[in-house]
Length: 384
Image: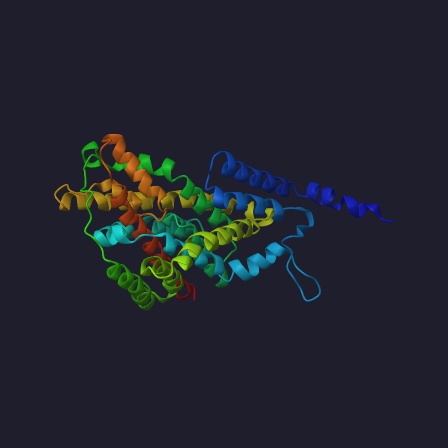
């Protein structure tokens, strides 16, 4: 009897030091998720997925064939992630969780969500300058929107077009910077605004928005967005459908399921599946470090773009708009809105900006989806 097969796992582990590094990285992510609450809903799954993907022999990630069944994580990847099912279901749940009223009661905040897409294009240009393929550069740029599902969706679309497999790297970068919003955004806000600007109080009363208006807007978002930017239709359509379930008031069970059971199941599968895309041979590259740095640049410029437009609106409105809320134009809902509130309270404890910041925050989700659709539509023509 050949007993050597019992030790092949140890042999394979010792033969590839990169595998050991990835096992450590997976452990660190799990630690950050549990001990530091670093986006725990997704990071814990990603960390464990990395560990499973880097086990010797790759039993959980091996491709399936006609002669042999593949690993379960390969099936998750092949039929749930590559097909974009998981990120689109996330958008369905996000729509059910999102209240568009702050944005609809003050439509000017849509502009702040658009301005916060500046980082997407800065990172895209930077990635091209560093020698990245245009398809990879487009996926990297979306990190600037601080929208994990849109980053995953864009990366899988670029992979379909023959781009390099950077799905794991851009996903971890996107969710890392989403978790670091309270660390990254405050210094940028303070750098670009004066104390006088940060102390501006905005009226807490909002123009009431009727249920009919909310329903019409939701349908119009899917219809008009799908016509103007067809490539963004899957993202906008699922977001709008989830919100319609929330606002129509006659399908509470479905709205609750989209917000809770469905969202929880999708996040559970998404985390471990994204982690499974990061074996050592794919993740441990110089390009990965560059992606993380470009993602940081993208996020910083997106925050700056929103704040700078906020400063312009502050001037044009006769100093009635607090430019801090421009930082919420990124898609990290509702974390960046909370950061805006904290920065306002830091200067004036009686200043309440949270609901004002939620307007550009929601607009940022729509803006990032639209930009992703534009890039997905343009890239094939540019590389052709």
